[in-house]
Length: 397
Image (tube, rainbow, N blue to C red):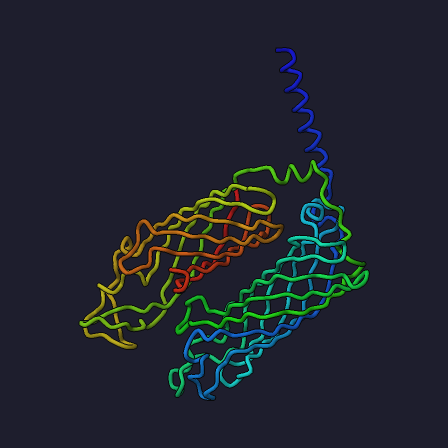
């Protein structure tokens, strides 16, 4: 019994020692940040996802290529900080870019503003490493849908769309302060079903960039000591509560025989999500979620006012419960400093008549504090049908 007590005391002392060591490490923003500026060019292929892109437009030509450039500025954490050791090579920043689709009269030449974050996946040497990078932002200046035009543009119906991208890049340190990058990238532009039509535009291509790191290469950061890595990779439960809202358009089937028509106006969406997440290690967390969502446009077809059509189409207001959905979903989250990217697959146990039951979500959480974040997300049905944005706030307990 005496020996057991000694073991317990020894473990408590070890835990207190490790906690004291962790507390003594500088935090991410308590030390000077490592800054970098750069430029990047990208050329890509635009898949013909609708007739307009395949040539059913005023020029009569396929729109299948894109070219763009961006000015970027990012930072990483000092190598003597806790985050700098745990997330070696991690960087995040903001950028401004321009993109052309070689058909300005059809789609325009949007200017984008975005945030991004990237990190190494594997290192081949001190100078060469492979990493991922995501982008999220807004693109301005599209030539939007015009219902009076001879050829209707179904891709973009707003001047401003969301922009999402993912890339895998090789990075090579040319010199002490210069880094060259090259890789493949995919991008998607969409208004999140806040307006119609909303086919969106996609691009897949290659990128080439060069950046200058002030004060030398950030790759000199040391790996985290074993005791710190073990502490950061220790499994634990986190509990996210997210409240969100948005607006959307809805196509409904009305009349006899039933015909698909775009309902005039925009409809409100509000939701609440409770998600317990189990941290697998410092980078990944997984877990289930309970999703509640009210959609003002859900289940309205049976409440159509007979004889009303077009811009004068009218509906009686359904009961609140008829427009409420409740679903269960499974989530995987890339959990990094400042940002977390969450992907989910779910199924509605309760769903308004006519709503798709199988849904997917992709969200970006931006942590303002350790426990409070801003949520920007997008919900789809059957991996292809846009439903609504998820714009809100959340807390992590």
